Each structure stands twice: as C-alpha cells, then as structure tokens.
Image (cartoon, rainbow, N blue to C red; front, side, top):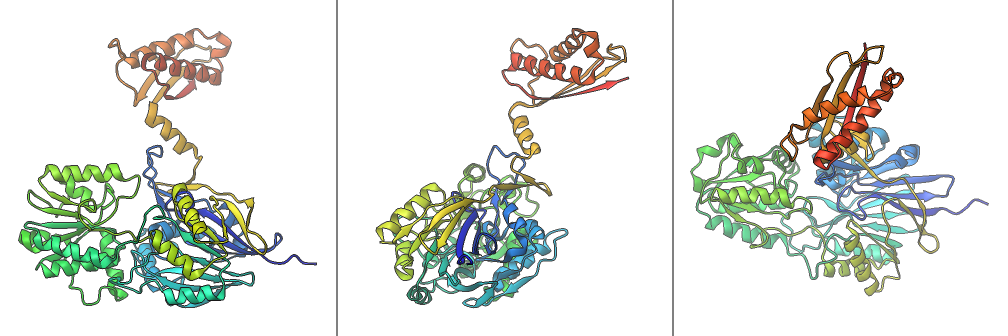
Length: 556
C-alpha cells in the first residue's frame, strides 16, 4: 500500500540569522516529493572574519539535486534578503518564479543593471491572487511592510493549509499600499491552519510598531525647521518613506535631488507601478549645486554605511557633485542593521566633524521597523489560530521569544528548528525527521565560493598574520644557484631589536638549505617543506605570529 503524502518544511536560510531567507515546503513521500521554494535572499558580508566577501547566499545543493521536483520559487517581497540571490543562483535551478507586479518590476530593473544577467522569466500574480504550483495552491495575502506589495502566503495542500507570513507588521494607516488584510487572515483561520511559519524579528519588543504616518509627520517638521541643506538617507526600497520625504520637501519648498544608483532604480520602478503618482519629479545629482541651500534636499543611498554608497562618499568629501557644510542637516531615516554599527558610526563622526547636524531614530521618530512587535504577533495568532507555530526570520533570541509568546497565547504546538532541519508538519505530530545540506555560499568578486573555500580561509589567515614568499634556485648537484628571493607581505619590517626581519629570514633560508643533507637538497619538495617550516618558525620567534608561507624551488 502506498504511503500517505506527508507535508514537509525545511529552512535552508533565514533561521537563527537575519537575512539569506530560503524556505522550502515538500509534499509526497520518501520516494517522491514535490518542492516549493519561498524566497531566495542574500546576507551582506559585514563579518570581519570574511575579508573580501560582500554577499552571502544560502547553500542550494539540496534543491539542485531535487531540481526536477522543484515546482517553483515564490517571492513574498523584493527586499535583498528575500530575492537578492536569484540572479546568481537561479541558473542552477531553472524553475518558474512567481511574484506580484512591483517585485517583478524591481527584479527586472535589478537584472538590467547587471553586466550579463541570465534571462529569468517571472510570472506575475495579482496581489490577493491565487496560483496553482504543482500540488500547492498559493494565495498572496497583502501585509504591511517597508516595501510595496509584501505578502503572506497561504499555501493550501491536501494535508493542510500553511501560512508563511514573510515580513509583515500591522499598520492601519500605511502611506502606500494595502494594510495587513485582517479580514482575509481571519477567513483563512476559519478554514483551519495547520502551521504558521512567522516573522520573529521584533519578538523581543513589547507593544506595537508605530505607523509610517507618524514618521512622515516627524520628517516634515524636521525638514521645515532646517536652515541649510538637508540630506536624508533611508533604505532605497522603502517607497513609502521616499514618498513621505518628497512630500515633506515640497511642503518646505525644497527640490528633491536623487543621489545613488539604487535610489534611482527604485524610484523609477515605483513611478512605473504607480506608487509615486502625484509626487513631483526628482532632480539628478548634477543639479544639486544649482539650488540655494534652503531650497534643496538630497535623498541618498548609504544608510548602512556602505563604503561605495552616496552618503559615505559625501562624508569623505569625495563625492563629485554633492557636498555638505557647517549648519547642514543629515537625517538617518533608517535603523542600523546589526554588524553595520562601525561603518555607520564612522560616517556620522565624519559628518559631525564637518559641522553637520545629525538626526537619527535615537532622538526623533524618523524610522519605524517593518516587522511586528509582541502585540502584533498576538493579533496574528488570534486571527489565524494555527495548530502549530514555527518561529522564523530571526536569531536564536528572537525565535525563543516568539515561541514563548506563542505558547502563552495557547498555540497547541510550537517547534523551534534550525537551518537544514527537515520538519514533518503532518499528518501526525510535527517532528524534525532528517537533516538536509545547509550552509553558506560566498560571492567573492564575480565568483561563487563554498564557505570552506581555500581562498577565503587563506585570506583570513593572511589578514591576521601576513604572508612570506620565498623563491630558491638549486643546481642538480644540490647547491644554491643564486641568492634566494624573500618577500614579506603584511609582516613588520623590523623586530624588537630593530633588526630587519627580511634580512634575518634571508639568512635563515640560506642556512636551512645549506644544512640539509645533499640528497635532500636535490629533492625540490623536501627543500620547499624544510624552508617553509623554518621561515614560519623564524618569523614567529621574532614577531609572535606565524604567517602563511609559499616556497617556490626551481631546479636549474
């Protein structure tokens, strides 16, 4: 007798961390399962132990293996941590993609900005619409968030209905788009919800997230009160915030100048999709200097301290078109993502040293989160009434607090899992039944590297202790043909006694070779290994650190 179909869930990214979201749902039995992927995002490489790595992505080995059973990829919304890995990873999957209009348009613009992007077709689903993807029926339920057209996904299967919330909050008065659809969520709850897989980002915060309207009011007051030039930085994708800033600038009789390619791209897409209807045209950065200081507002990228973004260049006084002076104002209408504090702090300090007034969410309501606080999480649970809740989209503390809250709200079953856990949702009691491959892929320049890639490991070691390069020419009789070449990179020039370390290591290389038995001197591998060990030990003796060491032996 055939085994009954089981409904499975596995996070491959985004649990136990913020970012890099990828969830998969499976329907079938051990022999044959159909899979549905939700989101495919990146995390930005702010970690000091990853020199040269700008972007990290989830490991998709399992989905590549299951490619013929992968029915599709559904996007909840168009933030980088939910769709930023598609251009790099989709060619390995080649599956259909489903998204609403704004997400599809922003993705198309993102592809157009790449040098040689793959051709990736996207099926557009209307907000509130439903689509059959293999054995899964997926409904896009509108929710409020900090980008247009964010959606929770009601995923209906023969085993039961799931609600994958994506990123959401309750904002009864959003500036653009629809509020979170309480009526529809209650109706889905009435149908019966087997499992809610929910956003935990703000589960540690009591109360409710303030509305975007309150932020808009504060920004308008601050811009009206400002005397000199004003620069505002925010997440480029927060179109509601961009609209609020534009309306505040208009009320203060200031022209809006866009500074930064990401901002220009999102604004273009927002205009094409109707989210900036009625908003005045913005000016290019080349016109910034043409306006009097009290008649201009620069809307900049770089709220997270990105070194190549507009605000960092302005703070370093190396932007070709935009400058700020004493008496000007910069408003950070954003929250610093954990890991970016140093970079943002550096920009703020540089601006303050130039006499610029800084306004952040620490002293004014210039930013609100797009994620639900505890009272909003309680509301969602009361509307949907799930049999099972799995906290997602958060670090361990966020997941734990969300789980605690769910239990207090009377959710019958709560399960905390980690990336790679294969969870059986039903039939029967939920349980972690297997482990799938899970990890990280690094975007290193133009290449994708495994997280254990030699280049990344060696670069980390080089960053800590430098590198020694030694070149030796040997005759076939085992004699030195010429003086060795020694080059030290990232190693101090002199030791504690003031002696030149490179000279000391040169002498060490010569003596190491000359002290080897003649037979070993004729073996280039034996020479190289002996010199490598001696050089690392010799530098360690003088410096207290062992660098990487590469020895090239040429037999002449």
